[in-house]
Length: 284
Image 1 (tube, helix red, strand yellow):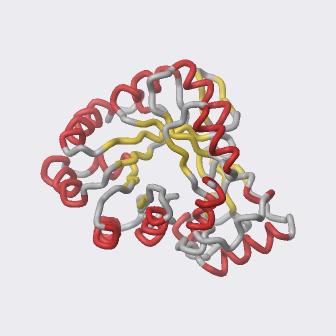
Image 2 (tube, rainbow, N blue to C red):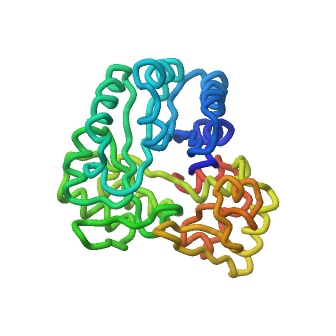
Image 3 (cartoon, one colour):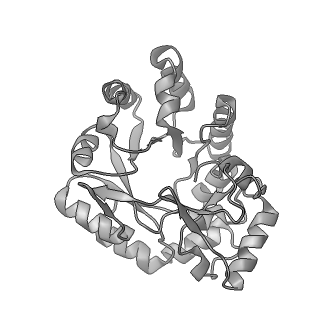
């Protein structure tokens, strides 16, 4: 999750048998995620993690003189590119294709997380990305998926089945409200290449979200009074309508918010658990 996934959380996920991610968002300095990536590789002895960066960060850097040498230095196994809307309608599409070709030479796998899939988008993105993330309507953060001109407010499993039927050779990553082993198994049986876990790890013991904020959320879950809301197609926890994700993660809810899936208030079995314990719940 953006602003939440740092080296400590990624290391915990890796130790538990998953693939961790580092996601700085747009406000962090480049030195922050470079340092976090090095921290991961030094501790774990490999670079099998996901680095998630906004499209704007990638496009605005001088690719040959700056961005590619940076990735050569970090060498993440996966690069997740975040953007909104239709990629094929963006003026940067051709530039991005060139960048992705260069990343393949570095043996870096690329993941596309589009917000607002269209039939045309999948046909294009499946050719230039190695994986495409499909977000269901229960996802933290962006939760609207479009097919054609119709907003598809279906679950991650329904969306996965629909897209897998139309694009059987495309590698999809499923995410959104997947909180049990049964749900994990159902998505793999439907053809998912991987399952992305957000809210559960965001509220884990190792998460960087402010401790007092996590206690507040746990209290509201236990008392069945936690409320998330959808704002501009994003599921979030914003009791005071704060506008900053960075401030929210650091506990300043009067100024900020955090992304949470809209099913999170209905379950309490994961409360105050470590990443390792959550992974066992999902896989054993």
